[in-house]
Image (tube, rainbow, N blue to C red; front, top):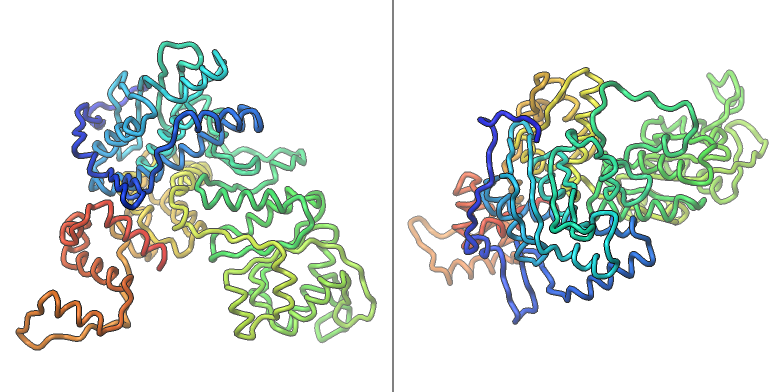
Length: 572
């Protein structure tokens, strides 16, 4: 075990009160639901899951099945950590202890600590060493395939990795060093930060739902120079994530990339549309040809046609030479039209003709030139709404909307934040010649709670600034993150009550009965969701944002209130 300053380490308590953790489990046969941490659960037969696992191995192969089950476990662990941490008022020791017990209650393994789990929330230090007894995964794998040459507790390893990564705010990698499926008496796992694992890369493939997705890397001593060889995979931009919504986009990119189909990327500003467009080009049949990008919002209206289609000498004042436009420059390759909704209507008509006919005329010229390009367009606006408002041509919209891909905002894939932060911290630590241990717990919680109006672009900028401000060999704290005028979030984002609704007021000194209050609310013609949002907002106001106190006022568990607050923040 690596040496650590014992004075700064904290330990998970041995004793766990099952009555406390049972608060988070609800069986409701009358509604046909089982809830754990307000998530719907299913009790299924173990032999059917075992049969599914075997069939996947036969169809996909062992490695792909391992990655699939590990990734599912990772997503479960990250979500459980978030909900349990909120329900336990941010108490790390209880959250870690209950996380291990929760998995035992679900029937996966029996945890027995070889050495007490040790962690430091300020430096990101973490160490764990567990025996996993009665592992369901190991036992069924051995029963189905006999003695294996590799560990088989895939979902459990993923769960532990996702759970501790979400809690610590940095990648914590769990590796199975002994396994019943390999003939050992019991399974054994070790968990530690990615930086301390010499063979980390070989264990991270499960984070790559597709081969073009990047995984977190161990910090290198100096920047890695790009290979002079034209290796396609080396040209890919960093696309990092393991959340369900991110993986859905990756699946779509894989399907459409090998084709010549027009792709329309939609999503808020900063979600990474240009990165996905480059991935589409590199993975497609035109990878060896040009990739040309143009931001339609950055071109003056009078120059749009010249930029897109080219200009002939003397076409207008200042056109002293003939030059090709972006379409001609992209010939044989890909043209990325960013912010396509900003094109003026007259240019939209000419763009439509070029796409339909596959030919163009330069401004001021009569010669028709054939062009062969793949179109990838992107917008942060709803083009259907733009069409209805008369600002975008309907026929052009249909031409572009062949294969739409919506990229989710960062607030809808928060479980990817630790992976992205780790990548950005490493990138800028190398650039600025600094060593950064990681994030403090408080900093990690604020990043999770922040609404991210600027999405991944904003996260990268904030981390770059934080690396500059943080002390060398130190950790990033809250004051390093939000020093650019951003509003520092509460521990959990507050819901936004409807400002347009005003309840009728009772006269001075009057007190309303419950029945009268309900009548006044109904008279205000409010939706049930608005009523709930107002009640949550008022409870948080009375308790100065204290979630636990607000939950008591509303007769809810803290985790239930946290779920409602997060849901409304995501919808805002």
